[in-house]
Amino acid sequence: MELPFKTDLEETTAFSSSAPGTKTFIPTLRGMETKLSGNWNVGDPGQQALEDAYFGRQLVQLEISPDGVKKYSFDAWIGEYSIKADVSGKIEVEYSVTINGDVTRA
Image 1 (cartoon, rainbow, N blue to C red):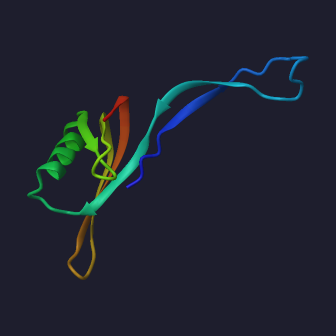
Image 2: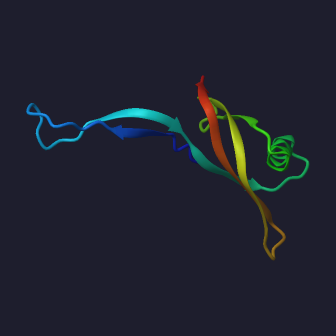
């Protein structure tokens, strides 16, 4: 799992005699897009919530804890939902997640 939070930066460079030849920026909008993947399990309530959010075109509330201690909570859109089966019988699932709004950190 990867949580690639990103803040857009807007260039504010102006002609300046105090710092000639340099750029300046200000932070603007923050967001995140990532993929969640694992073994497909139709009985898992979490996977069912993600599938329902995708097909229902609804926001889903997610809480992700990469280390089991620090938690990130946010609303998200599920933009892609992919089920992959191979010849060995293993079935995997992948969700494309786009954050909607702010993140609560605990």
